[in-house]
Length: 267
Image 1: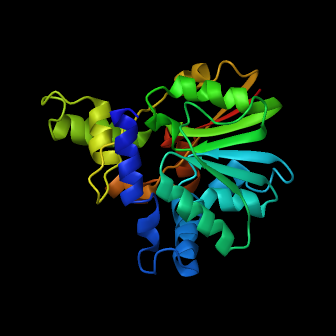
Image 2: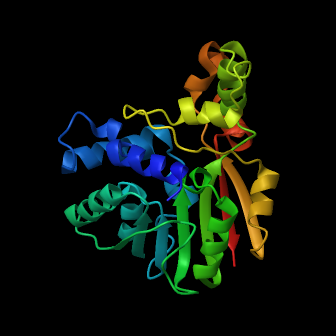
């Protein structure tokens, strides 16, 4: 395993993504998972259920690459999909398996690397991955693997960080790169994201990459049909400017300079 992958495994093993939002409750309890889910879909990203299509794949075989604690995987299972989750981190699989079981849902799980999926060609109708493939060294190789395991006409739905986002330019470039002089110290934007964007209590420093719309489209060029959407903008990112931005304008900005670039690609 490369150093980048080992760091990612150690980070998410110590500090599962999203766990902080349920920290008022016993880890792994229904109250814990309920609170994590409430925060994710009501406060942080209320657009997710519709855009990701949690209820659109009933009866379909769906693979989530990088399932984490299983929060999204549970939604697909509730929507009737036949779900499989893989993750590089063994602890994530334990949590996901428990999570789905706690809510009366079933899934298959495997400890695996997204660059080498342990499945035969054309095994799945849908492959979903949210905020994972930009952490692996060979993202293009991971996309080829997604394409390989999809059946003809199958759908890949993948979220990557957006290079054209307000967060990237105001936080990574301006705040840390320029004002805090990280660029002068020889740190790249990728170094800054590893240090600040994915900061956790465990002190992990995973690899983090960003993609423009055009880069994302090229990355998925092996697919016959590619649609690009942009989402995820928080009012808190605008600080004192927030009260000056009308609701409709803010929603429009989210579709242009949001932090998530979402690729929906058909094989």
